[in-house]
Image: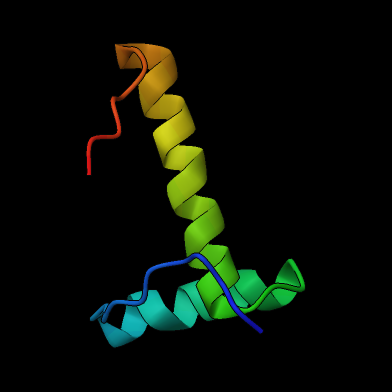
Length: 57
């Protein structure tokens, strides 16, 4: 299955990883999808407060 998502390594403290895993399980998401969801929510909140972010690559 092809995807347009970038792959990268993320290092987390065990405590944070376990908490995200708990939340992901409760939301019936994979850990990766839960992290992506949390990031998207944070970006959305940031843009509401600070304005739209440009996405230069």
